[in-house]
Image (cartoon, rainbow, N blue to C red; front, side):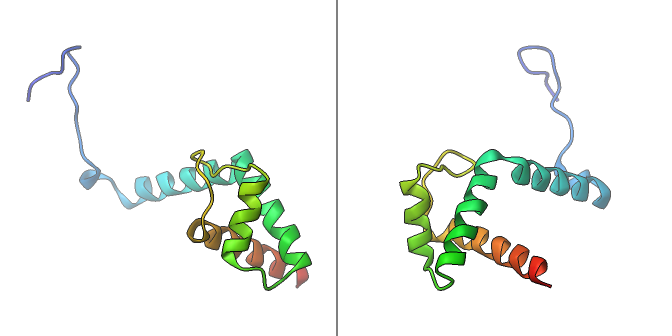
Length: 99
């Protein structure tokens, strides 16, 4: 193995990760995603829209989020596919609160 131009070696691969390390990484990624300010705003807009219109389409929700200028966590525009994930989360949260 050769060092890079700074003299550092790139060691390891994900094949050697234990289940605990893999799970910890997934949990850290989820926590980061839920703490994202755009994620909070997105869920809030979807929750309010579903209260007004429970049968709102994914396309309608995406258009509303884009109209409000809310970007995805990566700074992109919303589409019906990534809105489906958020609608599922919001509906689960709403059903838990109603129980």
